[in-house]
Image (cartoon, rainbow, N blue to C red; front, top):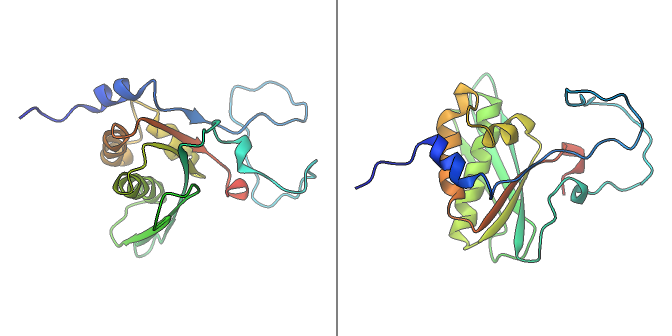
Length: 180
């Protein structure tokens, strides 16, 4: 039996199939910056459109690609977490899922675990092409990193290994207010 592949070999293999998306630049002029724009939690900035769409944050997806939104909630005191995900294309029943776990160390780990559960269910449903949408920017960036934060090493490896089973996969950051 062959040993399991290392994270770096998985990452190298997935390099061409994983696409990480960040929000498009703001339409208002701003000075160039090397750091990502910060988000404010309760600002009410005017918008040129009354309805926000997550489509501007997702990679272009074809009709065969399933878009999956994931989310997690974590309680720092009890270390309990809940995970949820929905599939936007008609992929059969069920088109959503949820799980709970009582031993999650951080909010970051909870968000990554939600992605793992969603990928596992997508494989069970026979989905071949998937685009993951999450408001957990650090997790999305970590999935594309060869050196994720220490707390995500194990789950990072599992997500990359699961990703090998899809013909196409992308991981997209979508701010909470723009999720489907």
